[in-house]
Structure formats: C-alpha cells, structure tokens
Length: 92
Image (tube, rainbow, N blue to C red; front, side):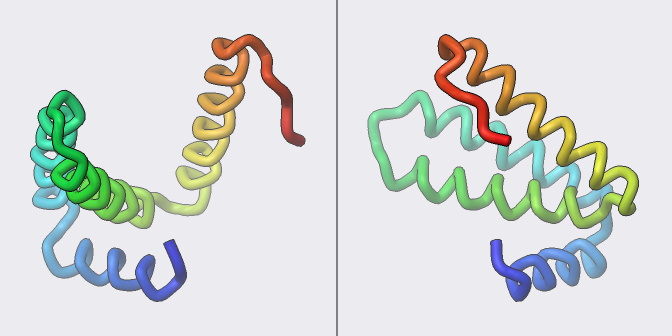
C-alpha cells in the first residue's frame, strides 16, 4: 500500500473505531475463505482486497513497538514457509 492509502485506512479506523473494524475484519475473512473455495476468480480478488484493507487498518492501530513485533512475526512466518517449501533460499 502506498502512503496515501495507508492514511485513508488510518482515517477510516479513526472514524469507525477499532472494535467495529475488528468485527468487519472477521466478516471479510469469512468471505475470503468462502470465495477461495469457489471456482470464480473475480469474487476472490475482491474479497482478498477487502481483507487487505482491513488488515492494514488493524496494522495502523498498533503502536511502534507492536508494529515492530508484527513485522518480526511476518518475517518469521515467511522464513517458516520457506523452510516448509524445502528451504528454497534465504533473503537477508
């Protein structure tokens, strides 16, 4: 996401509130799961985009230390998936 989109996510979160958007994230994740199991491509892309926006709203709600923890967890997950894929390579 670019900075403009991130700022829009921050404003949406500020206006609608964390709890409301957290509930919306759950709904959008459920929809993504349903569309991921389907045959059609377009609904999946739309659901994926909606989840991405909701995840960004959750990310911007974190303070600096929590964001550092988040990025560390993301990196750990990527490394874990690389190991599961047979240790393709490690990017440092």
